[in-house]
Image (cartoon, rainbow, N blue to C red; front, side):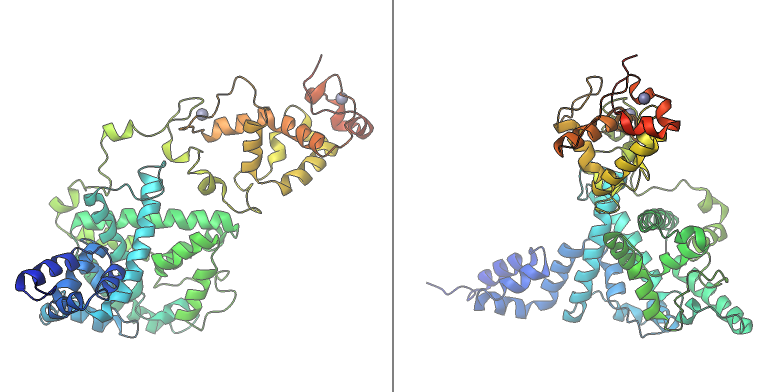
Length: 463
Ligand SMILES: [Zn+2]
Ligand SMILES: [Zn+2]
């Protein structure tokens, strides 16, 4: 009997197996399994590395390689020269090397996480992993890799982050050179690709706004160039901000890029000319500079979702309204209300305003209720109402595919919050005063402290 790997047919089969492996991790585990596999790999290393890289990264591999091979110590101008020179044909022969792998994998992970988020927010809120078709995914990934590369290359001079109140001459020369380079970089893209890059940029901006809300730092409101600065640190850092619910990773990155920045960096509103209009302005100007025919063509969006797909979007289970990406449900709860315990009530900054009737103006109750709400994430209150028999019959039961819009959720909370508070009090064995006849509608509770203290108003009016 022949030993495995001895005949050419064996070798072919082994190569086929190696080429089909989905990740580099799987490849390096597999070649350790037997000497035959290792030998086959060694003889066809280039071919196997390229195949696995394609399986792992996907059709955006050429761009992924450009990003992987960008060294942050190489000046932008030199790098762009390599990209555009004739010799680049050799340099970019797209042969994946061992040195590329670590970068390729790290970037591919970032891109995959962004794609999951994009799909969840733009295509299918029922699922948190990407539901993009192969073509949609390819468009998205190309755009994201380009954004990553752009934010590596620009601003070419990282001192652009520092706030200089003098030296305007050097800034002007820097600015002219920088504009040319940016346009040159973007000129390599077709109009469709530029429009898709713009779409992805808007999406990243949406996430930056989300972090700004969560962080409650109001960075966007306090610094008009904040959005541009944030875009310029690149999607990987923004993703970290999203995961950390705050802008610390962004601040750290800027400090690493340009050590001259001060702690008050974001409070200083002095213009940073190389950052303002960071990418979007340049996309527009490149499209406009092309001939009229091409700038008037109707761009193909990343998601070419037809009307049939839109019918599959969920609707509010209570009022049937359709605002698919602002519906609260199993998968969207944390995104819309935040998973954090402390910030859990963010979207409803003061839940006490949801108290029924005159209760929200009852100083005694508001104080008690606020103390209780601070300790309880909003999601828990909502779940208690459903699971602890508090729900009024006019509200539908939760089914598997239950969604609720913000307006209905607001009304739902108004209908139930006082019932929940009373239940909490009973659970804690608190003494509950006698009910006031006028219940939550009582007007005396607002201006007579004694009355508010003596009677319970968290109840239905009986007259
Ligand atoms: Zn609704
Ligand atoms: Zn009363």
